[in-house]
Length: 116
Image (cartoon, rainbow, N blue to C red; front, side, top):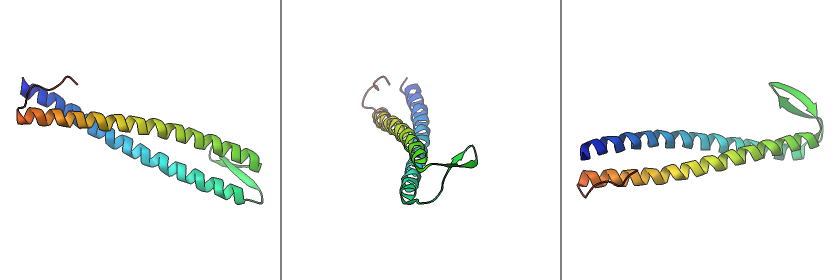
């Protein structure tokens, strides 16, 4: 019984490790986008001439105000996604710790694991 439970928990732990890795990659990507938007906003603020916005792979001339509005919307979207990813990551880290502790208990023979 303990062996079957250990195998089940180990498989769940491995899946969780893969999920954590995927979430960490997503966090890095969103943080990179956030930094790019910050730099774009700074560049837009310094802009004195024509302003262009990328739409579907082409550049379109736009006003500084419209470009700023679009940039803020994109920043808000990235911030929201990053917040969600951070919450998912934190929850996965907690779950990973619990699973690790359960696996260690089984390996040490300290009693039956808690239900996951």
